[in-house]
Length: 132
Figure (cartoon, rainbow, N blue to C red):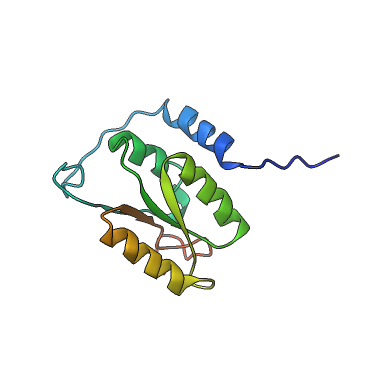
């Protein structure tokens, strides 16, 4: 059986995310004032196993407002970077084991530019729900 390789797997995955998330109902409780339009930037921190909904939620709550998201320098990270690009994010590639310093410097540049940033603090290797 032949393998099918998509040039940009992020596009169909983004369509799937939009289709699934379009069926969900949300109630946003914003105690921290994140949705306040007067805020120049936001830092989004979410657990690794909850990243599926993040790009759609950000685009829905803040339409037209891009940002940067930290993704691994691995092949899986490339797929995540492609998906996030479909939602208007700039991918910043790096992790604790590869290109971490460059990624932190790039994220700092994004913060200085007033961009929102997204980070998963627990990482794919875990431990789950603990900052790493």
